[in-house]
Image (cartoon, rainbow, N blue to C red):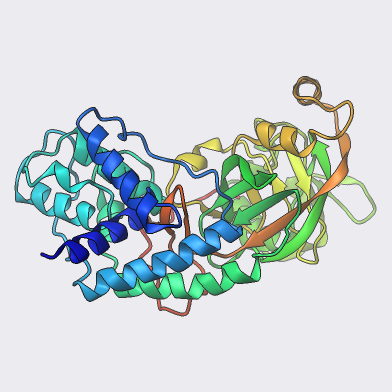
Length: 414
């Protein structure tokens, strides 16, 4: 192999693994640095980018990633790997060799790791890096979701990047000094300040048949300890069928039925085998342990009637598949999120936030400088310090056919 060919190959690997900067020479220098420190395990931790997804740096890195992936495709791309459904540290066999080679091709594992048939800590670290780049839980162990992602053809990945670079260009202008980006297919929220990611939050977003909308707005207000008025669509699709099976559901979940006159009526007086319930208002009492909005609702003016909020079902944030809502967005670590939103609002430090939540009182906090908020749909992007990222096209907006969904949707509560 010629020296020129080797250099191009290393440049591709550097771009794919997220250790490259804009120029090829620094990329190669960092790749060399990786090799020097490889035996010490210094790079076993998964990198997390501080570069905003919607930024000129991300756009440039994505354009470079397209070049890198095309170059890799011209060299044969990557093979399909046949692996056991479960594999982790200590496993042995030809499948481990195939996995090593697959991870090396995309720069998630350094070639210095060799062709050993033992699933060691270096393979585990490479799997973690790959999982982080495709939005899976970074367990470092092989499962069905990881295998599906490993076997997405390179041609599809290139088309994803080409489709999404157009979206990134449309957001490459000045979005504000402080802003929020909710990337729906990634089920992830970023807060951005002065060109850097301040906080990241896993999110629960709309189901395939109840999609979260694309929008551009500002966040003006936080509602603490809110009540929840059940939307008409949820009354029809979820609540009525639930009451037919579980007559005590409303009472157990502290949801009151309010008539048009404002009087509270008993669930037992409603004919649940008809559409009578659609004529009433259903309102859930405040309470972070059971209220569907949790302790906090973040108002977002929009024609879609959606908003962001806390949730009592915090277990969803540990799932790979977080398309679970009826269009609104549930936010992990919501106290950190609203503390960032309110940081420039006098009298609303973290201690005050915790005090108000603990009080159980319904209190509204107006944000002194309403924060721009963008709900976007991006399934592929790159950052100079975080590698090339891919997510399932869960709403089929990329036009590439059904996404290789890496996890199945389970039953969700309303």
